[in-house]
Length: 297
Length: 297
Image (cartoon, rainbow over all chains, first blue to last red; front, side, top):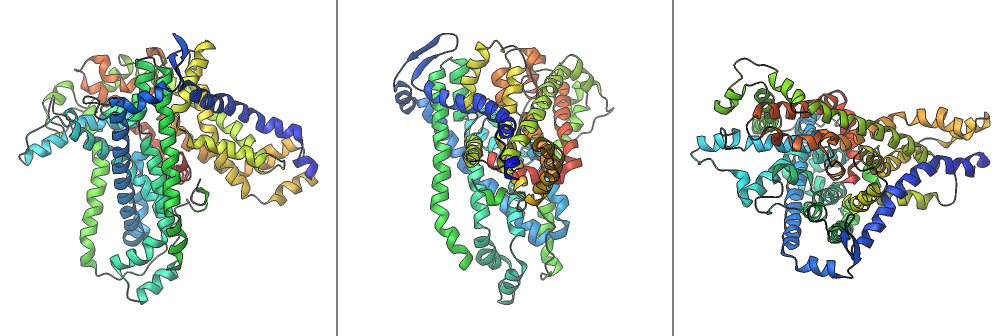
């Protein structure tokens, strides 16, 4: 048995092609990209060694600072909203709709699979002022608020962007968290009910601690996803107005392809990668103690 | 990586266990209103864009948002496909997404089989290597890849998209299919060897059929990632003939200037309701699959 399962030629034949493609198209470029961070130039102009200049620029460049600030604020706001709303939805599915939840769950989930570009164009039209007020502005007008170009000011543009992404993804987090809630054993809930816990106190003392691990995973997934936000910002606001909704990914894209600076572009990509890894490690570490303690309570 | 959550067993939203109703029916009414509002928020934007796509230019320019099209017509769709080049964009997406999907699944299944079923020394390390690729943002590989494709003379063709799509799906495919292989009793493979099956025959006649469902789910999840991709397509399509549906849609309004709203609404509808149709048929699988693939962030 072991000679067949340990057949070296077969192993190379089966795992080789995937490993080769993965190495050439992912691993080598990752290392190469780190190499770019100490250079200046692009494919057409050629590259020259630049030492740590790119990192020095990154920490003093006001546009990079704005991109980092936007990315972090966006990631925190969207993560809080989509995980919180997702959790409330999951509670709604499990404790209120119960068996009837399949239909609602399916409907609330579906924006996840829609192309971001299509959703962004749709939201542009929803909040439009010209040629005629879209549903959002028309409703605002009905309540006496003058129609405004919501994507024309940085504050409201940020709000529309956040609203759109929460609309798109809360159903996804609801399904993720729902899977965690369903796993809570019925007898624990019954015992708590017999002890007099009901409604919110049941959620607070029993459900929340028991679903902490899946909540934590959701936060990590969400932060990792939102730090890399690209499609929604490009398609909805194109980074505007005045660069106020430009995330690091878009700034990196512009640096590399509009201004032709691969070295600096790679530096921004590298910093983004470091941020993603750091956040994951920090969240994981800081909540680990709670995780091991919560089941005993 | 939090494998507990992403294993196919826990990520599956089972029918919720029935829990005894305690609350009087009247107190439940406000929550039904919440559910109603929720459904309207999710569904209304899609109804609105569909109705708008059936209107004439005059109606779009003068109607308030709740008015229905007077004589619903498909003119906008015809013009989106003929003068808007939507047919070219859809074709480009099909020509890149499906070959990449087939390659990812073929390479990924073979690698997962060798990594999980066969026994060799470094398989743990190789599996970890594939996992690392899930965590690194795509931004890290784009610039070196651009350089490679440029030097290889592939710029100006659809090959960069097919190759990058194939590689970008590999880590998730290997990871998810390997998880399924782990759940298969080893006795099944050992029995096949006793019967004298070669390793390749065992892979094809025993392994692949056993994880057929997993392959289909991974393919479905990966289809949505690739079909909705904007970042990779935007990086490697340098001419109008190469645009995929998302890049084409991003620039769609520009094709007509700011005047022709109808074809834009039609193009959004095609993009939205195409994915929606697939989702409505396979919604349960899509939900499970995307939840299991959430490590991708």
